[in-house]
Image 1 (cartoon, rainbow, N blue to C red):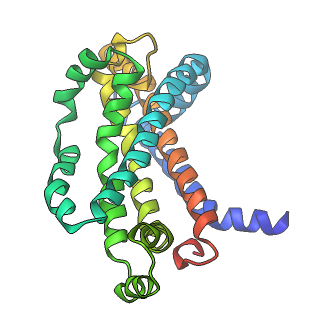
Image 2 (cartoon, rainbow, N blue to C red; image 1 turned 180 degrees about the vertical axis):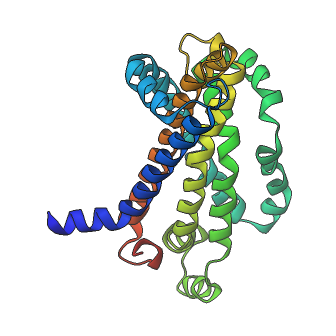
Length: 262
């Protein structure tokens, strides 16, 4: 137990200290300068709002979390599958990789209303937006890892008569796992961003209203404390998803890759 507390303090102590000190300084600054509440609420007001409206905000957080998780899950599965297909052939990569960049450059603000028409407003449309925003980092990082496999090891597999599929699944994909998890870490945060942005545009049309709807409604009504509370919850959701991916990466890579030992 003592060793666990020491590790926990080493890992999370410094950022917690920075958070507490920063919050206290911000509270003092807002009180001292008398900043209008509609511009920047006191951190203490935001904390009170989180407590007072916890049922409403938690329900909105759950709605956002569902869409973000669906979008992230799709980006993880589809992104890795596309990267494997692109890595299987140089011709396939040259022909189709430019089209995957579309998912990185598509203006989600413009396409979100169309997705709500095609998929109906609600979870499907919002999750589709999260998928579009987050899939490219998975494709790009996984593909980079697959292509970077040591050519000498690839030749050794070929020398022993291994098929291209066997070499892909037993050599190239395991070697690319660090890159896969890099892409998943980035995608975890982007999925939340895509979800909240989609909720700005189409979330209020669905049956469930997520944090994006809360932010828009509160900003229109001048409730800056609720806006900041919803933003904090969205950030916490992104950090939780990032932490979950990081935990899985450490479990998978800790016995053989240096990145999981630091």
